[in-house]
Length: 452
Image (cartoon, rainbow, N blue to C red; front, side, top):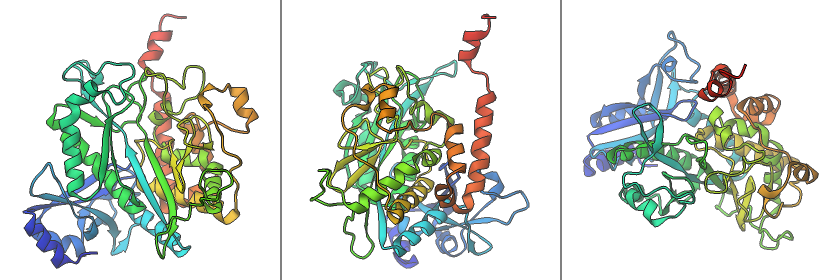
């Protein structure tokens, strides 16, 4: 980790005049304070002061002592789109102590416990998102300035991606200037939907990067007259946005991937450790869903039923069942290659710090209890009827936030993985469900106003 003087020199070399001390609320939304560069030492030693009651999920009232965001020098991140400005991820402190309801502080504590068991969690993430515009009536439409992104199967389409090339090239340039290793960008399965892929890293670094990526897309998109949204399902008839998580455990004392076994009898290249980890994920999947798909909108991605495993393009590309299999995108857990697993259920609307904390504890529970995931599922799960799914011993992922929250309350492993954040999380998410459930939608008015 660089020291203050090294960072001071780097700031001067890069022409940085202003610093953003940034943390996230319980939803994973970035919050910042801006300071002039000469406040660097104060931001390291004391931190930027925040009123916690003004931020969701911090468990504070108007009487509470300040939350102080102390910047992490290892997260120096110049803003490519805003010359002279740099961001540092921050850990929240209250009364000189790390604040347990800070998602980043909590993830660091969990990862320390994981390291004490001999492991580190390495994670890659696929940040799918939409570019949209708002219409005069308040509705939204895919951003399509050239009026060419209208195919029912727009994925990878050259004409569809061409108007967005400058946007994607800006993102790629900014990310690679930071050493993220972007290796591809593409038009995704829905009109106006895009993805930029960068190399994996340890869980904390990836959570910091995903947060910054969302900050970056919001500002770069505006340059092109668009709104960047990581809302999981902005259009009912188009594929939703996931944050597919690729992961493995590695040895803490050398970095060797402990998920890899080229002699695996199942032919997937996974070790016993990996299978036990997957066993833990599958056992706790319903509860994990409350954290990896934490909004009411997320469940419009995960719905299962006649016609619900397809979209305008033909498929949702989203898992409906608690399952694992080979290199097969109809599974929740897809084994992409030796020692390499992807969870396709995770929503773009998640807080990555909370997801990674809960996920690794669920997996470690599987390792400690030597849970078996069963045999892998093969073939197209989208083609199976409900009775065929149940014959395989599979169950569906939760179909609503209410269902996943109920599962979370009954799962001590996942609930305790949230530490002191758990009560605030449950309170806010039940409040979200109740507000959503009592709201009357336009669809209901259209269907029922004159029916009776």
